[in-house]
Amino acid sequence: MNMGLNEKLIEVVGDEEKVKQIQKEVGETFIPKEEYAKVKNKLAELQADLEKTKLANMDKEQVAQHELEKTKALQTELEIKLNKVDAERSFVNAGFTSDVYADLLEQIVSNDKERTMATVNKFISVLGKEKENTANRTKESLLNQTRQPDKSDTDSTTNKTVKKFTL
Image (cartoon, rainbow, N blue to C red; front, side):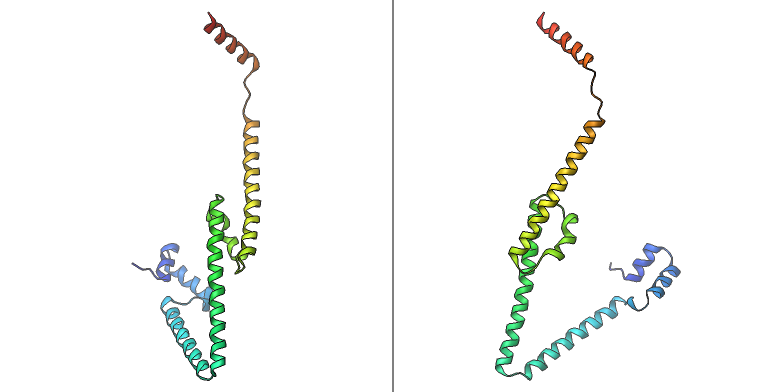
């Protein structure tokens, strides 16, 4: 069952009056899902009509140039998506989970593969060093907190054990 935003808010907040107050405060930024879908579909239709009108008013050379620009934009978009997948793969192979690198991806991924991967590798190096330093500090802290056995206890136990096996 698909739950609308109103129902979800009521479920989370637990009070319909509080939900109405939230909606009032949010104001115009609160758009029901159905209305948003209608506007989105209308926008897609208008963009398609605009595209047709532009193409109808162009000569062959302009149409070719327009198609070339669309193709280049699509190529750039696909390069970015591919580089994002490669960047994610590098982070995963380095042992990081998505919660560590997810926010970084939008900032470091571009259509330039070499630049993207160089930046990813730098982040992996820095994050890896920090992860290692944290592990070492934790290990050192735990070792410092661990009580060392008395030397006299160790020596007498060792002597007793040696005597026991040598007799």
